[in-house]
Length: 324
Image (cartoon, rainbow, N blue to C red):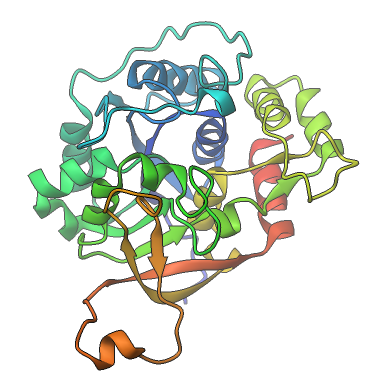
């Protein structure tokens, strides 16, 4: 190590903005170690046109530079689109009444923008999908050459244990399981930032209130979004204004990988119809089982699966980046 400051890491975010996607964008545009080169939008938390609008609004409120934003897939590869408006509000952004953006999206589609920006980057890109993986699957199938300039894909999706869309499936993977399965064939290093850590990174109520009172529009927006996204009931029932970072934790991982504990594990996605569809099956066994002994095992992708997170570290990192 020569002690010289490292250049910012080139990052592209694929999102379905979304309250916590917005929190992730606010962090990404303000962290000095991240060079946010592009943002692509996909149907998920709300319809894709709403995602584009919300993304442009967040960039405007944050005073971000002119980052290209492209519209992507309006539905999963096979399934119809199924939004999460009951979580994110009718407009996908907590119904905060934010003004319509004056910025406009790029004149190319998401897959075209992804290919262009990945191949044009002077350094390999870190790709951060915080949404259903439809755009990423289309990119990998249409332009597999992009993988030569992707450093890593850090995706918010999946769960080792409990799901949220179903008892076993997390929303982003459940929304488009085939796309998630394609991601696992990408041939580049993958980090799965799943619900097991996603749910744990919570900003305490007093700090949320401080953000909401800040004169800076972007900082204040972070506070309003956190206030709309309450923490899990068992975190601290007495702290009703505490808010979970959600997707933003995946971007914190890119800025500070040491805050996350991962283990390289086999992962596959359940695609069959029925109650397990969309489940990420993570093999944590110490040794092969009877299935493998009897020749019924399958080759599965190895993924750095997040198993633990330094909550205080990530909360401090987020606040020091987005806050005053």
